[in-house]
Structures are given as structure tokens and as C-alpha cells.
Length: 307
Image (cartoon, rainbow, N blue to C red):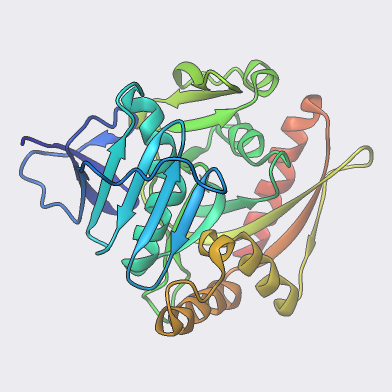
């Protein structure tokens, strides 16, 4: 079967179905990840939805409305979609939690957040659901900076004496409709609902405006408040480490889910990031009218981190 080839997260992805949101790779590009269609993975009704079964040798994911995904080797993701589901919906979990496990197994450190290139360095934004991660990322885009990734931050920690490098994701940002309207990104190439039951929209970004991989310069943990001015507070190393462990993608399955050997390298990568990149709590007011001020504070702290 012919395949589609794409670039994302420092990988060449060969897929048996289209993943339109990704940047197209040349046909001769050598794949590092294969996405293959496979019958018989779906198990039907589960006690939980979505259902995850994560072990050292096999990682299984199933959404009742989308389909099932299986990883046995990090180079291959097998997909058994429901027959009535459009590819763009299959790609939502594929490009999030599923591929995060593959990237983790391939040697990257994955965080649930977004990242923007600010003057040659990667600013990483983390936060709980609804904290405003994508809105913060988009405020930086509106200020003239370039997107690295939204929702999934993949860091290469292989250079021991350098900051971890944030890999380029794909050209889209997920926003609530009011944030999308307030930001009105000029580089946007249209938007659509993520899912009929979810009111978030996926705002496309011009691929030519995407940033290339950049060293991590500063990490911001969003702490929304009802009032007060935007300000950043640097965390001591112990608290920074706890925060990164909390926002690591693999942590939602339990840090030992991929085995003790992975846990050792996972902790090493996490410590590498904390040692080389300052981590801040960013106190922000829930006010879309303050987005310019938010971008200003982030730029100032990122500049100070490299001074």
C-alpha cells in the first residue's frame, strides 16, 4: 500500500492514511515512524473510555468513538479506526497521547504543553486543562514569534552540556472560540471544530511560518487568577522537577509503566531539563484583553534567562 510521508517532532512519519495537518516530507525521506492500518485491534465496550493498557512491551489505546491504537515497537503505530470516522478525527488522539508514547520510547522527553520560538530560544508553556496554554502560545504568535508546537512538546535531551532542544510539531493551534476571535491570528489558514462534541477549534498556521527546532530557554507554568498583574516567579529546582514530572505525558500512565529501564532515563532527561532551563510560575489574569501584557512578560523573562 502506498503511504503519505510527513515531518513532525524530528521524525519522518509514513502513514497509510492522510494526516493533513502535518508538514509533507519528500517521497524519498526515510521513515522513522510507520502508521499502519490494522484490523482486529478494537475490543469494544470497556470499563473506561478512553481505555489505556500500558506495559513495557505493548501500549494499547482505545476510544469508543474513534478506534484503537497499538504500539509494540516504537517504530510502528497500528491503527484500527471505526469505519464511520473521518481521518481528521483519527488524527486527534494519534498526534497527541499516542505518538507521545512512541516519541518517549524513541528517546525524547514529552510534556503536555506548547512552545514558541522567541528570539532563537524555545519558550515552553505548561498548565492544567483550561489554564490557557494555547491562548498564551497564540498571544506570542500574534506578537510576531513563531510556533514550535502546540499540545505536545517533544524535547531532545541527548546533548549533555546543552539545553534540551524542542522539536517542531505541526502547524496548528487548538483554541476556544473566544480566544480565537480575540487573537485573530494573521498567519492562520482557516480553522475547524476539533470534534462535533468539542467546542474548541483547530486554527491552522502557515507552515512557512513554523520555527525550526530550538534550545529550551524558559518554561512557564500557568497559574490563572481572577485579578492582579501578570508576573513570573522562578521556582527552585526541587519544585521545578516536581512540576515537570506532573506535566510529563508518560506520567499519566504512571512513571514506571514503560519499565524500570525507561524510568531511569526518563528521570535523567527530566533532571537535564531542570538543570539547563529555568522554570517559572506565571501568574496571569483571566482577561483576554491582557494578552499583549502576557506576551511582554514572557519575552522579558526569556531574555533575562539568557543574559
